[in-house]
Length: 105
Image (cartoon, rainbow, N blue to C red; front, side, top):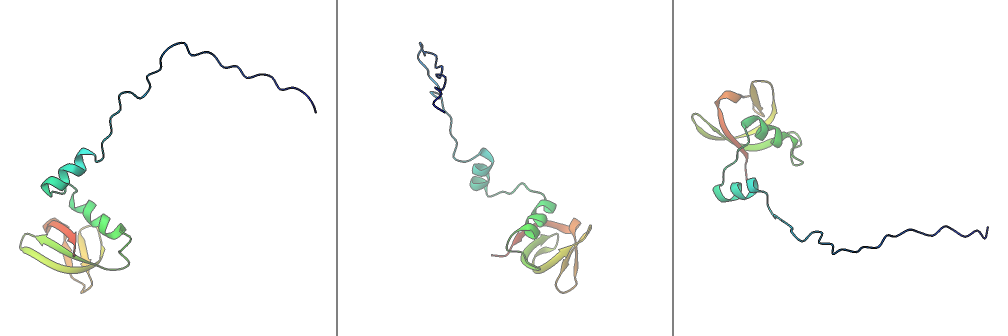
């Protein structure tokens, strides 16, 4: 077991290496900065509703503020089907009437 291992080949570096001299770093991507500045949210209603139902805080109900054609209402939603949101009081809110939705803070 006293065999000698072969040597390792390492070539000489004869030139100056300038790796990573030009580096670009952005703390925020442009969309996040734009959202913070203008306070606008570009997600559509279905994305917002799915985000509410997929959040770790949602167990079986969520208190939300829904902006509709008739104004803002605060409801406790428990589910959704293809065309309506379902509240804990068995009310159906048509998705077509919803202009904006957010979790009540």
